[in-house]
Length: 318
Image (tube, rainbow, N blue to C red; front, side):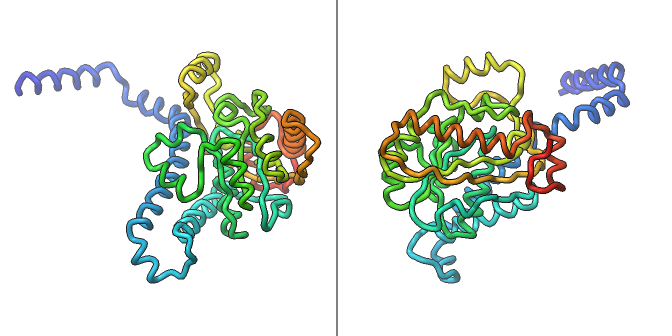
């Protein structure tokens, strides 16, 4: 013990001799914004796990809750509404979240929502919550397979009907009259997209095959300033791309959590056309979504202007 004590004291004396306290405080103040920038994405993760805890408590104590809450036969109805209220409150307060073009979403019946995938698809969480609270409809969502390996995700997926999805399973969801959201770019677009908002679909036509199989319209979906809320580290992109292609899970670090203005724009529905192929439909939807981005998004995106958009109208500012 004496040896350990002496060693500890020696280290303390050494550090106090060679490290300037004023310099340490200056360095801390300089690095604090950078530290916060990388910590803010954990707020999003925290919200996911708060949602998990809410649903877990609801599942465990549903008998007590059901005695005090009138609900229908759907087991998850109350739990989903409670979680949706949490997400919608966060959306309104933190991002001043708005939805433009809600009239393009059918009040009933199926539709396929095709959306641009940001670094984190927080806009889809916000939008699903808003639709659930305002229209009492749940949007089924296709999620990457790696998500289902995360602790607690299975419960969220069960409650909100998130699944990896195949052409047949997605088609069946739509044929049952539901809304379904798919991002053709998926994790690849999330990880390697940037503030120029280019679509990174890599010739994926699965969503088009789903729409043609189910004979449903497609609604393009884009959220303004999405890449300014959360971004990836821009360095070592080739190395991260190589690693991603090797293991197929997100590897590029994310930073941000900036309270920029989020506005979701829903484009006009692209009606079902039996005379087009999946490849032709994919190109048509990509063009419509690209036009939606060009119309409503400043390119390249700017975090500063995204913050200023909290005080501007809905038009794109040059």
